Amino acid sequence: MTLLAIKHAKPDEKLAALLERAERSRFTEEHAKIEPKPIQSSHSQTYQHFGPYSPTDFPLVPSLNGLIGACSKPFEKQLTPTDVRTDQCRLSFNKADVENFLSPLLNKSDDLVRGTPVTVYNMNGKECSMTFKRWASKFHVLTEGWNKLCKEHELRKYEDFVTVWMFRHVRSGELCFVLPMRRMPVFKPLKRGPQMIIN
Image (cartoon, rainbow, N blue to C red; front, side):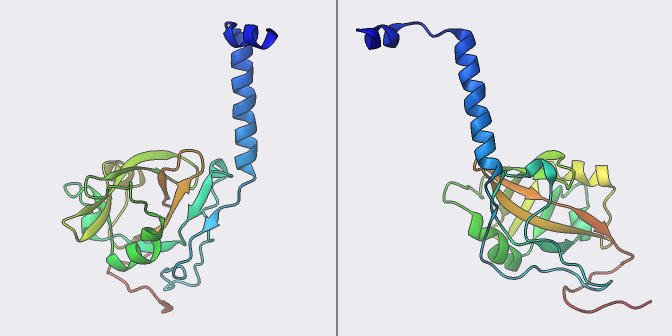
């Protein structure tokens, strides 16, 4: 009889809010203990022309602590003229990098023809909404928000290099990217590898 009364009783709004906060806090604490899961793929690919550069396996963004699930190994991209043209409005990835680093994280529900919404972070945790998609069955790109990021950072062709991590957000399951940048005194396209430029 008591159980029946409880079942049909109207919940106290304050009690319901308190229970919801406790559950949210427990959920956050549990996920803060989760370690990122590396995706088995190629070793990181970076430009070594100005000395060793080895980004960590996971992006070290304090605000994402405990929120990074499955994560790609990092790779680096030198920005091309079309990456920074405002009429192009996209950051393109070459086929090998997509296959080696990004594809292992994709699910059947990720519609790259129409485009999958993603959140892009910088190393300070600042967010920017973009779309990850495949163009003309050839190119994979980040678009719809890339131009804004280019303007904010005044990105330049050849001189700017973007390190790319892609991961699954622990809470939402959505695809996310972390894109830190570094600028080098370069004015032509380079090949990734161990070559060093000596002045």
